[in-house]
Image (cartoon, rainbow, N blue to C red):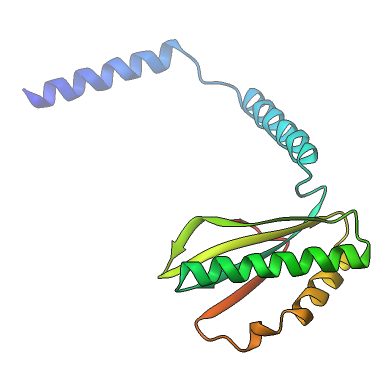
Length: 153
């Protein structure tokens, strides 16, 4: 009896497929093109790649309070360096908790540097890192720097 039902269901869906022809590939590609165009418009409006460059700085450690405090301290240092270097075209975003705040036993905070050209952003990052001497001395804490990150999770 179950086999008859399966056959009937198959016939029903087969009948639906015959009566309604599938979309043409041209309409699918135009829909994808529309989504792509809207995405580019949105990215330009919020100043995100491919129109602007990003450098992601991820702070990780086992203690959430220490990670938050060090990320905040580095954010202050990089903002001061930005003002001293007069890099008004660069924006510092964060630090803020990562979308996945705890991963592999480590708490995470992220800071983004956004600008239209990578070399001034790298000079700014180097100047801030030179001022933040604690990076080399702390165990159980690390910073991951990603130029033009593929994802921000």
